[in-house]
Image 1: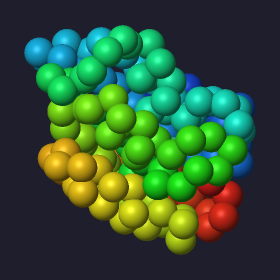
Image 2 (image 1 turned 90 degrees about the horizontal axis):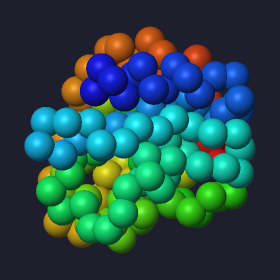
Image 3 (image 1 turned 45 degrees about the horizontal axis):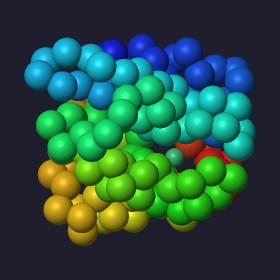
Image 4 (image 1 turned 60 degrees about the vertical axis):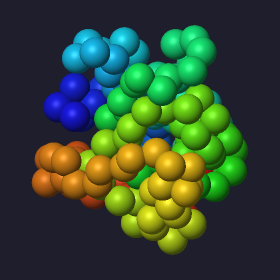
Length: 139
Ligand SMILES: [Zn+2]
């Protein structure tokens, strides 16, 4: 998650008004892909990381600094994309305070039977993300 936080810091300022989220994908204790929020309408952190790896990811764990988005805005829902790629497990630092998300991204993952752990390094994620977590700004 520490590495995901470092990725997230690379997102600023291009990602605005979306929050600067970071994501890393881990297989057998090695990072296989990294991502961060791109400019609006382009890849979110999860999508960027997923775009760099092929195939099913049932043996891969995703570490994301913010709850994956549940809704289709300018880009497809990251929670659904993680489900489609059959990710093995997801660690999330912080829930998204955006009312369109607010736990729904977690619910999508859990409904698909994916283990989800929320709260890892949440204090650090809050420090990085809270200035950018405004309602209706994430799409
Ligand atoms: Zn997203």
